[in-house]
Image 1 (cartoon, one colour):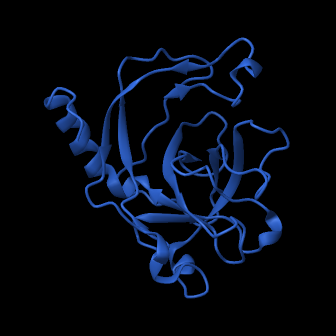
Image 2 (cartoon, one colour; image 1 turned 30 degrees about the horizontal axis):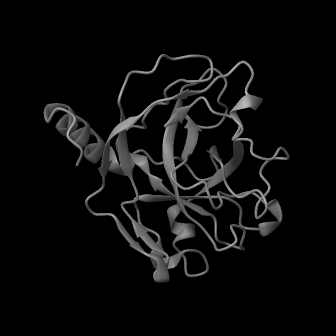
Image 3 (cartoon, rainbow, N blue to C red; image 1 turned 90 degrees about the vertical axis):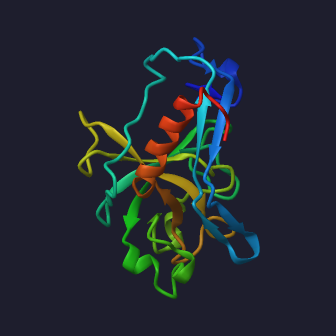
Length: 209
């Protein structure tokens, strides 16, 4: 796992901000389901354990977990970050650069309507994006597993801690489609699972589950 990476071509980061560390443990959710023909993905979450400690720098720092059960209000602008397909959805003008886009949260009641994601959506998920495809912003191919980050307490991140409220899970074919906002695993719905598995991993001496 490479931390502090901003360009696919590492030589573009000068001086190098990158730190690559081996992963010695992966914990997958035991209830993970992916039925591709139905676009049905549930319990889409996993934990990874690094083989060594990583020193914090200006480019490498942790992000907080949200409070258990926390649900951000509709309209809250949060940020999706990733290496998604720029040709389908150009989030950035520089090729091979880490992309970031602000997406407003769509409330569950709206996003679970038949015109939106209907019964594909679960309460353990977050919708975020725009009703109109004219905005040209969404998570896209290659972003899966990336963070959806919100400033603690809502909009305006200056001086506030950041929390990872979502993990990129799925979206519309082609990334941009009317009333098909991006869908994220809601991290706060898995607080107990995260806590239990971290403690279990440590207790069992780093045994991969």
